[in-house]
Image (cartoon, rainbow, N blue to C red; front, side, top):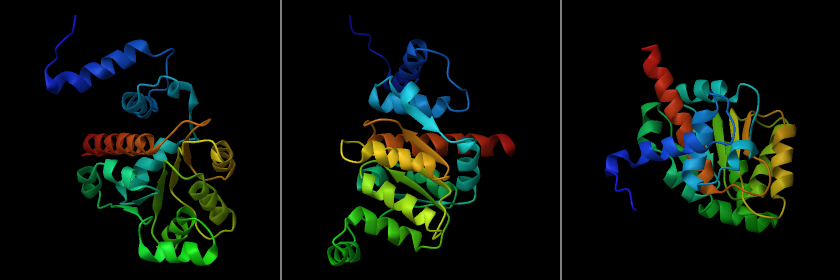
Length: 212
């Protein structure tokens, strides 16, 4: 029998179901992120595959409070991030993948737009959070730029999905010394990257409200 729920209560009921079906207890600090990803994907494997660097939530909250900008590797991530929440912190989300200069730079270098986009972001001279949901080459380039001492992101959400260099790029991120949130293995995607951004924005908004 179908349980018809008031549309305003659907999300609340979804999170109640997620909580009841968690395979084991999870860190309460990380729980809002893990549950938001499960809500987006209906995939409980993320309980164990999401990986977090030490104190990453606290670092992300501090960066967002200070108006850090977000750079994504897909317009889907850009579209999925809550703009109203970002604006409340004086932040913006950027995706350079379709920019004409990026296409030309990639052609000249025989590289990918994803790599060129990360180089353009690094040259912005702003504190940045990266939300990578599609291109492992973007994630690898961020790690290379960090290793070369050219810039240091506040946080990298590294959840590209696929088969070629996906696992390797996530492992490089975890070795890089950059604060990270990633999904071990092949799973991920732009929807996951956006979900993590939005979870962090909710956490930051709640922290700000509690500190008023």
